[in-house]
Figure 1 (cartoon, rainbow, N blue to C red):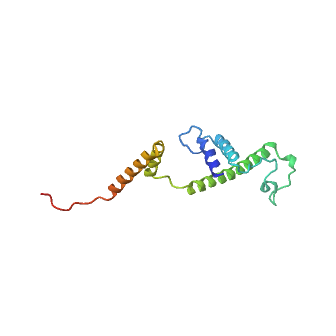
Figure 2: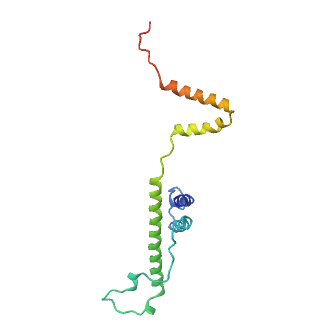
Figure 3: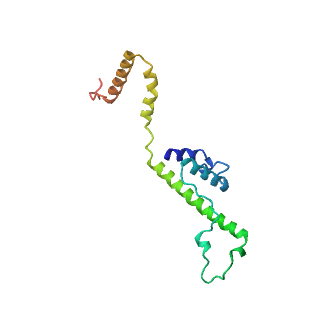
Length: 156
C-alpha cells in the first residue's frame, strides 16, 4: 500500500512541485488528492446530503426555524463546508501516511555499491575462467591499495 501511495503522489506534481503551474490551483489539488486516495486504496469520503451534527442542532437561545425556511444556498454552503472538512481529513491521512513512508524508507545505496553493481552485467558475460581471473585481480588491487607500506628511511 505504501508503494501505491508513493506512486500515486508522484503522478500528480501539483501536490509537491512548487514550479508546477497547477501547484496553486486548489481545485486541481483536491482532485489529485481524491485520485491518490482511490489509487492507494484509502476509504473514500462519501458525499452525503445529511448536514453535520453541529449544524443540525441549533443553539438553545436561537428561534425555532422550520427546515423549509432555510434557503437552498445555505444548505449548499453547509454541504460544501462538510465536504471541505472531509477532504482535509482525507488529505491529512494521506500526507501522514506519505511522511511515515518516507521516514521509514532505507537509506540510498552508497556510491561504491552502485559502482560495483554496474560492473556485474559485464562480469556475468565473461567465461567462468576469465571471470575468476578478473575477480582475483580486483581483489588483489583492493588489497594492495589497503595495505600501503611507508618507507621511512632517508633518501640518499
